[in-house]
Image (cartoon, rainbow, N blue to C red; front, side, top):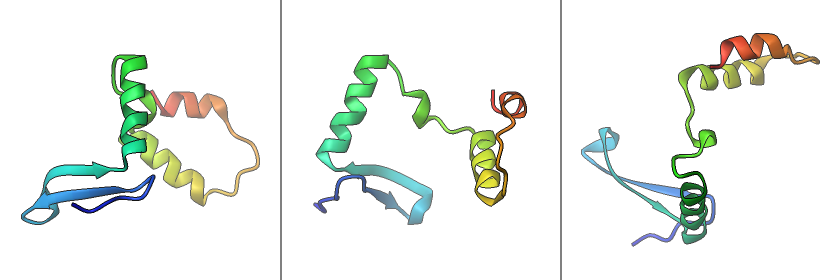
Length: 78
């Protein structure tokens, strides 16, 4: 069994990457996820990325903006 480093996830798949079967985490990372689940009783919001959030992040990395337009951001991300 491979041993991941902290912060690393090893994906185990079958027939290429189309069929992910398991993810191997460092024990400390797994403990952190379990504590989030226990505290929140669900998957933490930070771990749920919508397509809109991913696109907003991608665009923000390219932008050369000094001020953040919070109103536009509130409308773009539900």
